[in-house]
Length: 50
Image (cartoon, rainbow, N blue to C red; front, side, top):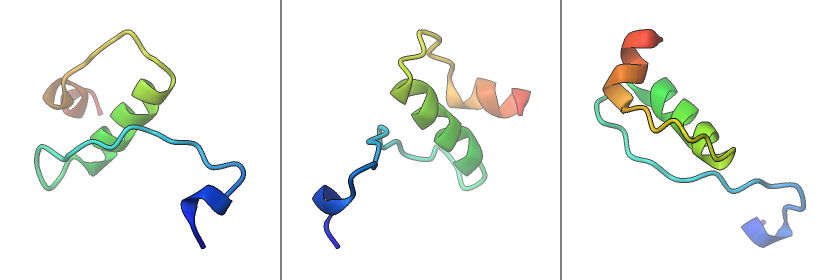
C-alpha cells in the first residue's frame, strides 16, 4: 500500500526526539504543529509539564 492510496491520512510534521524518553512529548508537538498552534513550546519545557 502506498501513502497516496490512503484517503483520510493526515500529514503531521516529522520531528526528532531530543532524548530516548520524550516520544510522547514529540508526538504532542507534531499534533500541535499540525493544528498550527502558535505556542512554540520547547520539548524540555513540555516534558516537565507532562
